[in-house]
Image (cartoon, rainbow, N blue to C red; front, top):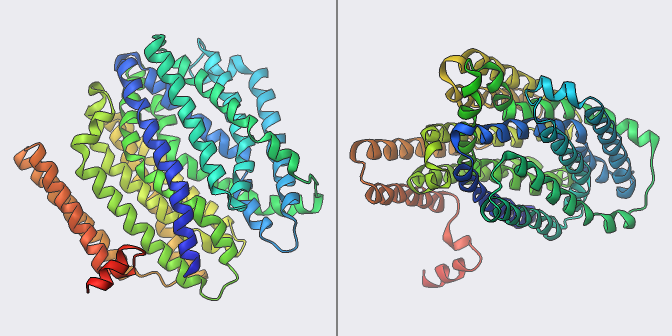
Length: 485
């Protein structure tokens, strides 16, 4: 299918910016966990504040990223008008948010436990405001299939961010969490400047009737987004509020937050897939073979996320050095968090049935149900089990939303997902993972265990090639393979 080739190409470009960017950001984890001692709780503060900003960003963008794709692909609407209307919504919400933060900074910082550091919150309020304003132009770049410019700006931010962090932490010796937020503010402001020329090229036109239609479409997506982001960050927001030892809470949250960084490879893959998949899905919605396309996309998404899961688990003896030694006690949560991220990715793939029939309210209900389960697990079990409850809460929350979306989706808009093939890959992954754990637990052989794990990964790749990606179908290798054959 031509669209699958387009999906693969765009996913590679978006994935390059996302995966390379996240990999480079990993360099900040050893930097922070080395220069910010565990007992200071600074890394826990960073984890907590960024969780709040992620939630606020969803509120400010108001579902307009997905809404832009839906209406810009409508033959009756002009893309520039859709962009202008979406931008007006986000800019208005951002202005109100910043006025409220700066007007009530003292009570807000006190309520969140940062009475002595309101500057942390003011800086990050500006950052999240600028991120919200950037979100619509970034989405428009995806709509225009300008993947190179999108990836370039994302990578520029990351390189600048890393460079300034190294300069401040290593060269100047500024090791406070204050500089984490300050550097983010500088970099976000700089990237915002690059969108100014594009904004002058837009034919600005605000359409009141279009606004009503877009808001009607976007508000369920907003609820969906709130519930979705809460599934990702609620544990980091709740942890300091629920953990019984207030002084220890930021320390434990720092351990969990640093270890979760290793698991974020799943978030990278899902995000890259989403950036490429979302525009294609809406454009593909009129084609007769759309159901087969969605089913194939789900299958290949799952195959490669399971491969990534095995790679991270198998190479944990190497990846653990990403974080400082004092923080490594929490590495056991990594496979659990990765499993939750896979479920989130499956749920994202399943979500298009209600987006395409303009019944986004279903997504809101599914995500709210998952969010309720996650909240319950965290509130009930964090006091006794600490960050382990956070990890399992993610599995419970995403698992609930995933199952609900599949069961109801197959009734409302059935798609022939290859469930037998999917089940085989999941079982093979589970078997190989258990083999890796048993081998490591029994022998503790270091490099020998790493070699054994690599062999397990290779076996999984062989399974993929034999079953779904025969070498003869690959572009360059395939020619040689067919010739030799």
